[in-house]
Image 1 (cartoon, rainbow, N blue to C red):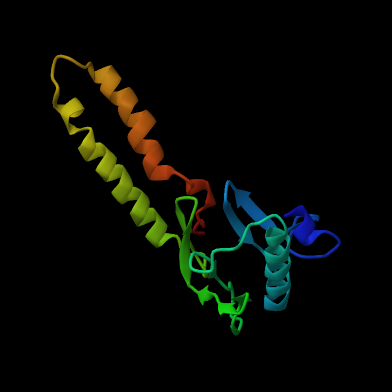
Image 2: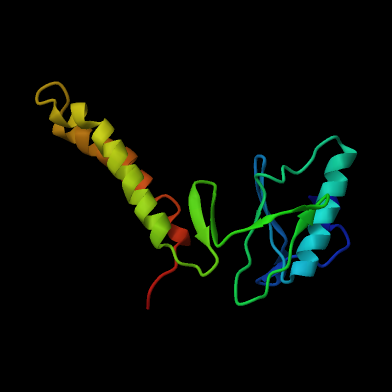
Length: 156
């Protein structure tokens, strides 16, 4: 990524710095203020990746525009990239308007599923103490429900 943004003013303003990308393992999110910048950054990324034998998977790649901007096609090697209103990144759902309702519902469903899978533990009367059950609940079920909750938009 460093070579992709080297010498360019890509990214969005984050405090006094520019934030151009979010990386985790093989997941990458590019951040730009204009679609032209995003296309340039994508082309640069594809070119630098190709130099070391890598390529961008155009089927898995999605583009999301935040705000009331008109959308033109983003392309990688002549292939149009799908534009979406929301997508999943690192287990959380992002939307172009900042709405977190879908992500919250998904987190609640996942926590409910974890709770149900632990039903044999909850029903055991004598083998596992209430204290251990409570510790399991607070260390497994609750974190599943509130994962990434610090990123959710708050209401005033």
